[in-house]
Amino acid sequence: MGDEQRVSPDELIAQARAQFESATDFTVAVEEEFAILEPESLDLTSRFEDLQAAARGTALEEHLVGELIASEVEVRTGRQESFGDVPATLAERRAQLRSLAEPMGLLLGATGTHPWADWKKQRIIDTPHYRRNDELLRYVVWRNNTFGLHVHVAINGADRAIAVVAGMRNFLPELLALSASSPFAEGVNTGLHSARTQIFTRFFPRCGVPDAFSSWAEYESFVRFLYDTGSITEHTQLWWSVRPHLSFPTVEIRICDGQPELGEATALAAFATSLVARLAHAYDDGQPVEPLPHRLIEENVWRAIRWGLPGELLDFDRGEPIPARQRIEELFDWVQPTAEEIGAAPYLGLPEQNAAERQIERFEAGASLEEIYAEQVRATETIGG
Image (cartoon, rainbow, N blue to C red):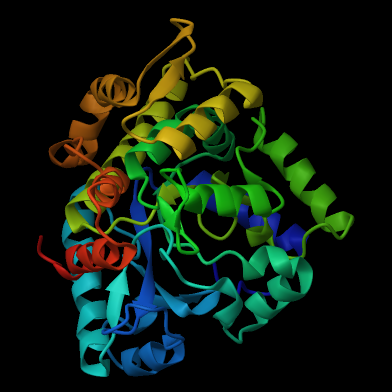
């Protein structure tokens, strides 16, 4: 998120529709959020403004932004013309950020939560956007010390984008199970695989799984209603886990935990992009994916939060739970031809264990939170890993 250009809601919505109608299909951008850490203690440290100042005049300047708290930094790939350009750019952005952080004596973390940080000690960055959200949300925004990975995929056609968002709702649990990296928060083993999702989606308004809109007109009517009633003052206050973005002609996937390992971040972005493109093709073929009821998706979101990749997800065609890994492998098969078309196929894959599984296994073996987090930080620092 960031400070949007201050235009009227009518202008914003009209511009957004026009951008979707002229968009180039399947260009991609990825955003990664990192914790800024003291090197000895691995505590969060409020040094975003220092990193921002260090980035001025460098190639990273336009791709580095703040993200709520001063102990967090976000880097963006920027628009990539095809997914084939994403892996190298993701690696480059991490390397650029590390080249700024290292001389300042800072380390970077990328799990969905910091294992022991106290949210009461974090400072919200001083920008108009975040001051407004602080004034609006208060305790809700204070507690959101979380770190995620977002994927933007451009879609041509406003109604087509809405149909893709409606279909993507179905697959949010699979993306979350694959990405889970946050079993620890506030100094405890939460018993969850994605504490980040529980903190963020259960606290924020207009968050989590959105309704399935039938057309751009229906979606636009709802957005106008929110503006007209003073419910929102910025379109970014729609914090859904998947949304049509109103500044860019993209479907934005926001469900995923941050990824310590570069290879797993790349694989996750490949999966998300392939799902979006596959849904667009299904729409073009006159066979759009039928949106599941909100209540059913939420059942699987909870399963992904609680049990993650080793758990089970409900298969609504079979009417029974199946292993999450099996479900994701079936989706890999479904998207494979599209993934090959957009250059994402070489990067699809399931790890033997994802970040949450690795951390939980270490905890159960007797490792401390400090030891476990240090291992994740080392993985994040291994840019070429």
